[in-house]
Length: 162
Image (cartoon, rainbow, N blue to C red):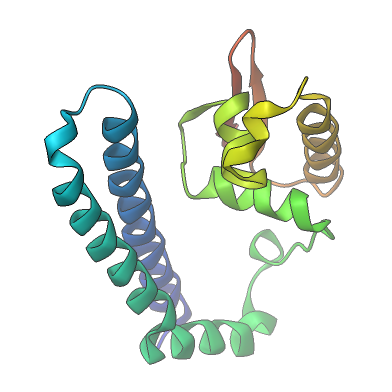
């Protein structure tokens, strides 16, 4: 299989994962905002199905084979696709959160809940988010990454390709 075809398959896989995440988030937001209370069971079933499909996709032998093929062929990637950035665990989690939501502006509260968990809304301030974002943005800039996390004044952050 040719490298461009592998990268295209990886892109399709990422789009499916993004679609699952969007659907799960939509159902969750619907549940906590305006949904009638008598629809909770249906939302629960739908969320369970989405979570199952997401798990199947992530544990599919074909997915593993694709990732293994890409890892083996990493020597043939050009310099643009080959940069490595050493990240701490939370920096990686933040980057993954943004990569699964390309071109979406993310509120700092939603980012904190998505990366640190639902209980984080009890925190007094979000200085820890600002510190992690500062470090991640610096590392991406220093590595010459072709992506950038921009601050959206008064709201949060957005992953863009300048």
